[in-house]
Image (cartoon, rainbow, N blue to C red):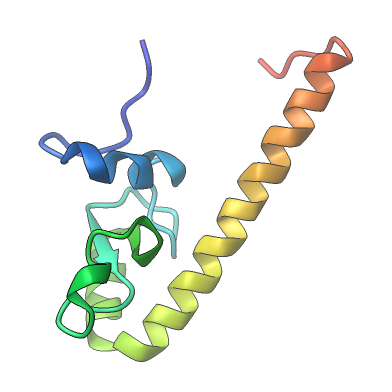
Length: 105
């Protein structure tokens, strides 16, 4: 059975975001409680549903992001990019090790 990283009732289109970050806050790595729009929907309504504009955050980081909109958008986007790149590197290393006959679990 596959692990589900999203909260119950999460729309199908939001699930890839939760999966990408393993249900963790992009800023502090605690369990996330919601998706935060980097560019607020009030400024760019079409970006609201764009995967690249949303990241999972915990309640504390969401409060911080809501009160520091411009600063938080830059920082959260930067962290999200770093985490995505790190996960790609880890996945590629795991695949390379598997080809050599090593197992990671």
